[in-house]
Image (cartoon, rainbow, N blue to C red):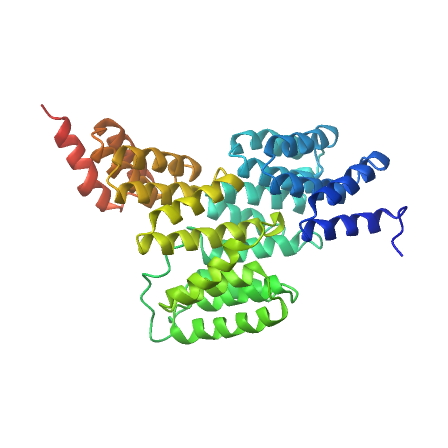
Length: 392
């Protein structure tokens, strides 16, 4: 029987309500529990997920800021706050809380939990190398290690957060030698205990070989997993990517449409977002711009910092030859990529050029070339033309 006085049982029941989409019941249980036990971590986390489901960013952020004001080294609260700030488009508020946590005690800066939080922050700022270096210090920890390793594998396999898999040319044989990133991901995977998440990451690693044989092996493993975990969004999204890589877009589209119809769940928010973006990309390729835009707007409802959604909105406007609107969307993508993506910088400067904003185009070109000196395309296509246009 359900025991009202047991905090663990109350939390478990609230999480069950959350999974079923019974938000009011989950919220009531958490609020009641926190009146009796204000420091209950689990109830706090569930409340944050509930607010995230409803895109009530400010309320959720305020809740975690209060927790961190009382106890700056509450690393679970800090990790959740970083996620919330990113999704609210307010990452510029994050450094203050990271610094407060580091100064909380003499040992705080070297705690694995602190390293994990800093690694996540670096990843959100589009600094994959810094993220990997910092997360590496957390990967042996009993509490934070598994999360750190999962994120490291994700970064190694897709540091650019790529979604454009249908243009890929598959290789006949596995690359020899294996790229460092794939080798590192395989090594890290061996540190993870078996779980559905670990199985999905293993499939992404197989797909990184970019041969038909490896991708087909991943697809059949995912189909087996989906027989057991029928609604497991990470597996559905990974399988869709496999089908796109195998040039089987209709199959990918069917699985992605299934994901798009499912109720958003904050616990796998990144996978939902990835699925919506893959489907938006499929729609852009087939010229269904209105459907693509709708999915991008949905991404931005749940994550205002989603650079890829802003970028795709720019792509749609560019295809419609609305260069001014395209530039405006690419501007947002450039900001949320922390001005560190050569591809987005190129698209932004090119659309500035098309919209006759020559000085802005030149400015972005300089920023890109400073970080990527061997990116000649932007010099030839944009910089020289913008300079030419400014000459009397």
